[in-house]
Amino acid sequence: MPQTARLTIGKTEYEFPIVEGTEGERAIDIERLRAQTGLITLDPGYGNTGSCESAITFIDGEQGILRYRGIPIEQFEQHPNFGEVAWLLIFGRLPTEEEYTSFSTDLTEHANIDEAMKHHFEGFPRSAPPMAILSAMINALSCFHPEVFTLEDPDHFQMAAARLISKIRTIAAYAYRRSRGMSYIYPKPGLRYVPNFLHMMFSQPYQEYVCKDAVWDALNLVLILHADHEQNCSTSTVRMVGSSQANLFASCAAGVCALWGPLHGGANVEVLQMLEAIHQGNTTPEEFVRLAKQEDSKARLMGFGHRVYKNFDPRAKVLGRIAERLLAGMGTNDPLLEIARKLEEIALSDSYFIDRKLYPNVDFYSGIILRAIGIPTNMFTVMFAIGRLPGWIAHWWEQNETPGTKIARPRQIYTGNGATDYVPMNVRS
Ligand code: CMC
Image (tube, protein in one colour):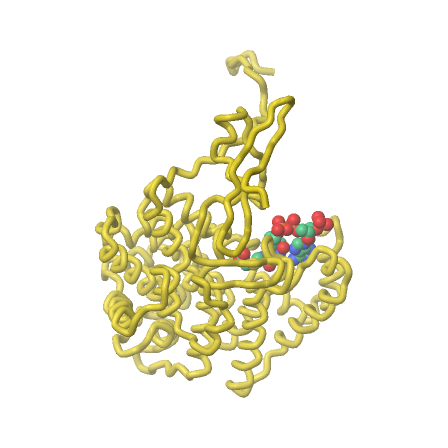
């Protein structure tokens, strides 16, 4: 295979190096393109642009493969431990027992938030979207932990990472409780990551929430399967903000905002609303699929399609299995699962979806699991954010530790007016 690419512009030929990743994916290194040719590339949506080299997560969208630090995500189904996966993503390998214990202790010790932070929650209306609160509170957190402004040494960084991973669930749980007019529930040091989160969400001062093992495993896996997905919109946002040397908390707060959109993390809410609309008889699976295919309709089959996967999203396969297992374990049934299976069956045998290689993605089944656990729909994207946080932190740190990292600053092709004179208001027509 050639190690360079040739580009001919007019009569001049230029040569650019080809970079190859460890799994054989290749890219033309155009870092010197503008310097050599005076031209830039135009790639709206960045579908053909590699913004960095990264050793965290590998995706093969054609074959439906997803690996964290080389480990296929399916293997975590037998080892559902979100804290361990967070450490793996951030530090590059599975932790030793000692490392894991120290990280878990940090997570436990830093679960509570400063009393003064609780006043910030009081300023939001009850109906405030939890993603807005989450982003604002993560940003506010840096005011209480100013050491995050200068994280040069790895030990400091580990402490900041653990603080954020721990406190995000406390913030999320209190955002939910405030919206219901319920009191703050203090974290309980004896509980692990997932049960402690569910305790802060659902316990009452007079009645403790008891986390069933099936729920614990299912939520651990939901978080793990959301933990990283290389250069997606929110992670790219975290890197973009971090590239200006903004601190870790500010960068992750920006990631929350990017995740909020319905084409990204917000899709899990839209999926549930779609399934509920069908269940309530407002539409049918067939009608919904027909509408999603219509060129002039804005409707899309939510939870279907992906920029990178042109095959099954491996996360959707695992999540489909977890949904079945959890409902069976709880001895319940959810008609929405049957509706989702029906939609999947119709879409996967329809040439529109086959030709465009549109398959269920991570958001298609996750909502059914969260709903079974009792998480309200408006908290679904918050759950995605809790899961994705270790990925954001891993990318922020990887970028921070890469020598020669530059501020991210794309260019553009200007299509506006040519030079135009200012016209005073009194003579404008
Ligand atoms: N339903 C109907 N048609 C679709 C869908 C869908 N869900 N997704 C893509 N298409 C069509 C689209 O209309 C276009 O058709 P045509 O070529 O005739 O114009 C073609 O497929 C390619 O779509 P695209 O929008 O150019 O693809 P993209 O890579 O820019 O978008 C996507 C990817 C995920 C935004 C899109 O598939 C989508 O909107 N899906 C629904 C929302 C969703 O489930 N988002 C969650 C994504 S996974 C988790 C995450 O990233 O947070």
